Figure 1: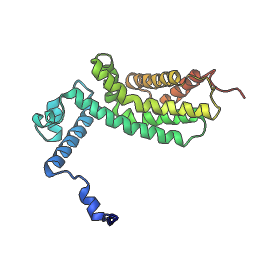
Figure 2: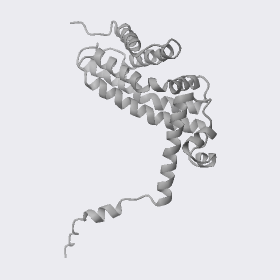
Figure 3: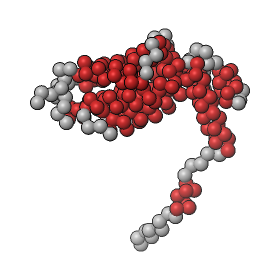
Figure 4: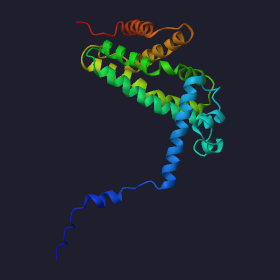
Length: 220
């Protein structure tokens, strides 16, 4: 006798199968998010070193024990904030690039959007750069993973330029991506110590793009 087919699952049945957070789990998620928001605010205002766990806990309205229940130490907390922020920044940059048609315009739009999205958090950017010189290998690997979405925006834009015939077919996309990202990051120093404005940053990165891509453009 053939098996009787089962009736299709009702929406209510499917919903009941979806795992839900219990109250304790939901409270832990909320606590973690409050800690991240407090840490983000202090890192952006003061940088890494001056922002203490005690101060972060105070801004979050909880004990230091609650902070350590969610994060092993300040370094892990910093990495979590950085990862979240850079993913959002990469999406902002990708959206800006998509509105342009030429490889140069896409790069300039993306990198300018990156400055717009992070310049108000300059101490946080400085902290990332400063820590990159003195952090343990494991932390360095985490930082590299966090910045990868930004570099991928540049890399994908260059690859599109190759496919569309704007850039030479033998262009070294990886090297060009690293050079352009490095130039973009170095300009934060001018913003921090020389007071460069957005127009100055945009002009600077535009000239750097031109120099880096010189010789890489396809000949008509």
